[in-house]
Length: 473
Length: 105
Image (cartoon, rainbow over all chains, first blue to last red; front, side, top):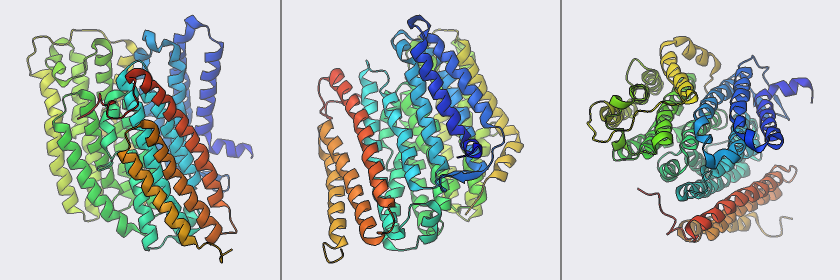
C-alpha cells in the first residue's frame, strides 16, 4: 500500500472518515447539543462532495478487485450530489422531538449505504460487488424502520429486508452457476470465459432477477410501493433515487464488461422487461391517491426508461443512462422535497390534499410543477432531454417498436403527472393546506434541485462531458 | 476424490434446498420461518460454491472464500431482520405476516 492506493479509493476513504467524525461527535457532545450534529453532517458531506470532483488517478488496486476509472468517479460524484440534497432535505424532519436523540444514526447509516454503493460501482470482482450490494441494502432496512413508534415504518423495514435478502439469495445462486462454468469471479476473467451455453444463461437469468429486485423492475417491483409509503419520506426519496441510480450504474457496468458475449440473450430479456416495467408502472401510477405511492410507481416506470439505455450496449447508451440518472436525481428529489415539506408541516400526504395548493403556497406549487414537468419530459426542462437521448440510443440500434411503446407510455405518464399539476392550480378546495413558511434548509434543497433541473437541461456541455467519460461494449 | 460422491449429487441437493427455501419464503406466515427460508437459500448457494470449487477448480480458493463471506453477511442480515421483527412484535403484538398488513394496494 502506497499513498497512490489511497488516492485511488478517495471517495470511499473520505466517506469513512466523515462517518468516523460523526461517530466521535456523537460520543463527545452533550445531550442538549445533539441537534447541531445535523449542520455538522451537512457541512462535512458538502466538503466530501466537492473533494470528489478533484481529478482522480485511475487504476486498480487489491489485485484488480477494486477499479477506479473516470467513469466510476463520475458516477460516485452524481450519487454524492444526490445524497447531499437528501441530507439537506431531511434537516427539519430530524429536528422533531422523537428523532432528536438518533440524528447521528440517520447520517451514519446513510453514509454506510453510500460507501457500499461506491464499492459496488468500483468492484472488479464479484465478491467485492456482493459485499458492496449488501452494505448498501442492509442499513437501508434499518433506516426504513427508523420511526420505530409508527407501525407503518416497522412494516416497511421488514418488507425491505426480507425482499432484499431473497433477491440477494437469487442473485448469489446465479453467481454460483456462473462461477461453476468459468472458474473465476474476477470480472475480466469471467468475461473472457463466458460462452453462450445453458448453464451460463440460467445463471445469468438468476443474476438478472436479483438485480431487477434491487432496481424494482416489473415483475419484481411489488415491495417498492409498500416500502416507500411506510418509510420516512426522506428515506423513501433516498431509496427511489440514490439506491436505484447506483443499482442502474452497476448493472450497466456488469452487462457491458462481464456479459458482452451473451448480448443476444440479455437484449431480448431487457426488451421484454423494459416494456413490462414502463407499462405496468404507469398503469398502477394512474390509480394512486397517496403521493408517496404515486411517486413510487412513477419511479418504477422511470426505472424502465433506464433499461432503454442498457439495450444495444453502445457508448451512447451508457452516456444517456448516466445523464438520465443525473436528471432523475434532481427531478425526483424536487418532487420528494415538496412532499416532505408538506408532510412535515401538515402531515398530509394524499393527492386530494394538494387541491388548491397554488392559492396558499405558490412557491411550493411551482417547484412541484417543474419537477412534474421534468419527470414527464416536457421540453424546456431537463427531463425531456434525458428521455429524448434514451430514445435516440435505443433507436440507433434499430429498436423502433420498443421506442414507439416507450413514447406511447410517456403520454400516459404525462396524464398522471399533469393530474397533480391540475390539482394544485385548477381544482378548488374547501379546506386547502394552510399557508406556511418552510425553513431555510428545505428551501435550499429545493433550490439546488430546481437549478439542477434547469441547468442540466440547457447546458449541453454536461452531456458532452459525460459522453467523453463513457464507454460501450 | 472423484470416486466418491459425484458432483451432480451436490448440485441436486443445492437446487432442492434453494427451491425449498423459495417455497418456504412464499408460503410461510411466520416472520421467523420466512427468515429461516432465506437462510436455506443462502446455504444452498454455499453448497454450490464449495462443490464447484472442490470438484472443478481444486487449485484455487475463490469459492471457499465466497461462501465464508456469504455466511458472515447472512449473519448481519439476520441480525437486522430480527431487530426489526422484535420491533414489529412490539408494535403489532404478532409476527404473523397476515396481520402485519397496514400497507397494501
